[in-house]
Image (cartoon, rainbow, N blue to C red):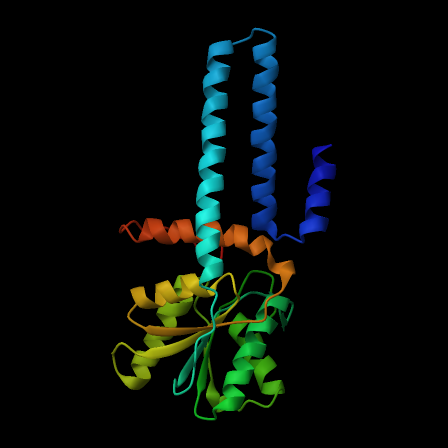
Amino acid sequence: MLSIVFAVLRLVSRANGFILLFCQFLLFVAAVYLLLGCMMRRGVAVKASKIVRIVILSGVGLFVVSFTVIVSLVLLNSRSDDVKGVKYVLVAGAGVNGSEPSTSLKRRLDAAYEILSDDPDTVAILCGGYTQGDAISECGAMSNYLSARGISGDRLIQEPDSHDTAQNILNAKKIIDSIEGQSEHEVVIVSSYYHVYRCGLLAERYGLKARTVSAEFNIDEWPFLVREYFSFLIYLIESTGITVDTSALGI
């Protein structure tokens, strides 16, 4: 039965592994809650079951409230700013399929292409390294995509060493510093609507003045809002000085 439910979740949500794992966790919690209810009705470990059920309900309530607040902030700040006069355009990675950019990444690249086409003085920093099993790095696939659309290679800087959003921005800052000298540079960050708010906050953390551009909205990216919720929680934790390694998760 659970296998059928997981298969339906994958089909309906088109979720990546992270989202599917979260759904599996929710199903596990629901199963535990129902099991405890059965134990209570049979008079088995009634007091302990009540306490655990209260803890589960409290956790669910906290999740719903915090998810609503964070996703509201993400959506309210999924803006596109005026980008005129900014030299560097940072494009955040979003995975590849074989040797091609993923659908989400293509949307980001299309938005970056518009900026690069409008201003011939702009330079793109394409962020993202290799993921296990892929034939090409994210930045390599991004460069190929933009080059095929007529953007000159000398305007495309590849950053192949990052594996999450924080590394994207920090490594891009190092590249700009190496070219322009260390300073609080102004950049345009291009990413998906669910991602630009955190990108802007991270840019500020690392000493960049960021304007953000949101790629074309598409409803099929809704599962990434769930992942962004957890990514934002990690951002808040790291704001306290605690370091969390998210490179394996790519968030």
